[in-house]
Amino acid sequence: MTVGGFLLPETPNSLIERGSKERGRKVLVRIRGTDQVDAEFQDMVDASELANAIKHSFGNILEKRNRPQLVMAICMPTFQILTGINSILFYAPVLFQSMGFGGNASLYSSAFTGAVLAGSTFISIATVDTLGRRFLLISGGIQMIICQVMKFGDNQELSKGYSIMVVTVICLFVLAFGRSRGPLGWTVPSEIFPLETRSAGQSITVTVNLLFTFIIAQCFLAMLCHFKFGIFLFFAAWIIVMTIFVYAYLPETKGVPIEEMIFLRRKHWLWKKIVPE
Image (cartoon, rainbow, N blue to C red; front, side):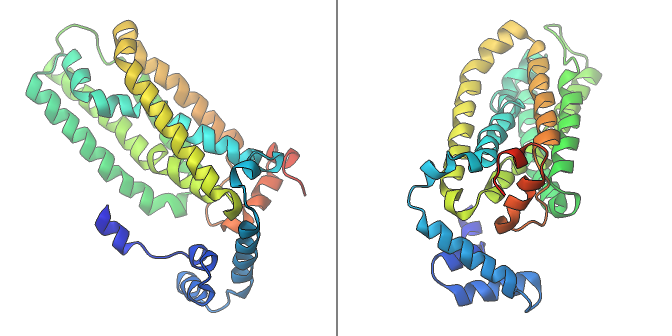
């Protein structure tokens, strides 16, 4: 992560907001591959000046016109955790042991699912700007629902074949999360906020994510003891809600600059009733 920080390029918005307009324009030209960026560059300058004029971003984000972004800042990280992914990653050895795996097999299976999660993130990186955010979120949600509703077994000893199927289904679930809700749970909130409320919006997103991570981590073992395999149906129900939420309330943000996000909300069947013209 530290090495990646050194390799991370500056963004035009960041440079402009810090007063380096010429550098920001050069970066924008390099990104777009053309010198014809005057209109977009001016939009960035205007947005930066507006953001600098607002002193209380938390008060601003609570205004009615920013309600759609606030809803996303709360719901996206909430649904990200309620997929049940942290339960699998935190307690994978416990889950596998409860299914009849030996001690070493549980650890190996846990390490393998972690590797699948890391690798599946690259699928999202490669396809998010071609397939779009909504497609990845909805298709990933459907795949996670299918994996969650499958009965993983009870307290009986699992056969070798069934054990392999269990690991396969869990890996498919992790794969679906890693290419959709995992990275996009952070990507979408980071690109929907205008500059004047971005710091407040990102703070809310991170806070909600950590809060629900703590709650699920504390409650999962007790829920597993009471629900047994029903715990997966519990998470499946939340994934269904998440998928419907994305379909109904999240506009496609692929290829839309931050300065033009407001036009997406003005075209949305619900948010246009909240966002002023």
